Image (cartoon, rainbow, N blue to C red; front, side, top):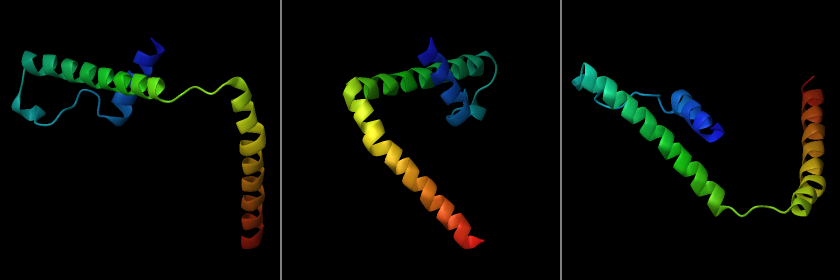
Length: 92
């Protein structure tokens, strides 16, 4: 349900929701059915991409994640804060 909801939000916010090219050539019930079909096609495409990425990239073990966080990400974040502070002070 969470994957479907996030795919629907991504479809609405970034892919135009139910809009599709040459939408003006149709009208009435056919247009409504095509809009619903396009919207669900976009949702299922996004879910496919989610699953494809999730099944392709290997999962980290807990110790690998902790190692990455403590030995790589925290020093990079501290360096980023120091560099940003120095640049802000230099411009004053």
